[in-house]
Image 1 (cartoon, helix red, strand yellow):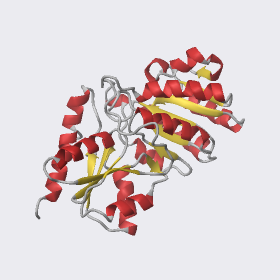
Image 2 (cartoon, rainbow, N blue to C red):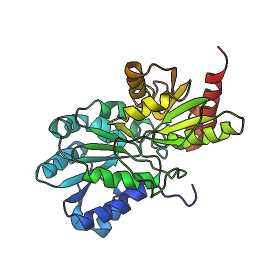
Image 3 (cartoon, rainbow, N blue to C red):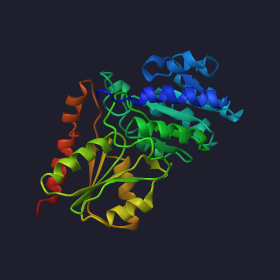
Length: 312
C-alpha cells in the first residue's frame, strides 16, 4: 500500500529505539534479518544484535538463557518457524518457566511473498494460545504494531506477536494507545457484528463501510490480543447485535473464532459464525489471489454478513 509502513519495518525501527533506551533489550536473528528488518538493528545498534544462523531451536534456547540472566530478548524469525519448528523449545524453556522472551513472528498468515506453504503457518494462534503463560498479540497495522512492541517489551513474561510482511491500510493511530488484553470497537452498528484480529480487522472494517452504503449497519470489534482475551468487551459487544461473525487470516480451528466461541458459550450464548481458512494450508501466490481463493477479501466478508442476515 503506497505511503503505508510495513509492520516489519516498524519492528526494526522500534527495536532500535528500545535497544538504545534499555541495554537489556536485545534482538536475536536466525539468518532472516533482511526479511524481518532486524538488519536495521544490526546496523544501528550492533552490540544489541545477535545473528545465530539457521538454527531456530537454538535461537529460542539462547533467548531463554539471556532472559534468565535478566535481559529482554526479542527472537526475530518467521511465524512458521517460531510456532512449529521451535515449538518444543518454546514450550519447555520459555512458556513452562514463564521466561521473559518475546517472539516476533514475521511473515504471519498467508500473505508471505510467494514463500509457499512450507513457510506459512495458519494455526499459530491456536498453538500459542494453548501454552500456559504465553501472551498472544496480532496487531492490525503499523501504528498498532509499534505500540504493541513497546507494550510487549515492558510486559513481564513470554509474548508471541504476529507481524505482517506487507503494509496495510491504517485503522489505528499513534494516539490510540495500546493495552495488552484490551479490544477496541472500530465501528458501531445494530444489524450484525464482526469480531476480527490482525490485518483481517482492516478488511472487516472495509466490509462494514461498504455494507453501510447498502443500509446494513455492522459493528466491528478489533481484538489485537488473543490471550489474555478481553472477555468483557466480547460479551458486551455480543449483547448489542443479533448475529456475530469472527474473522481472521488463520484457521477457523482454535484461533480467534474458537476463543470467542468458547467465551460466548459460557457467558452469553449467541448466533455466531467463523470466517477464516477452512482446515487447509496456504500456498504460493499474489496477495490478492490468495485472499480471493480463501474468501478473506472485504467483499467476501460482506457477502458472509449478507448471507447471515438472510431470513432462515
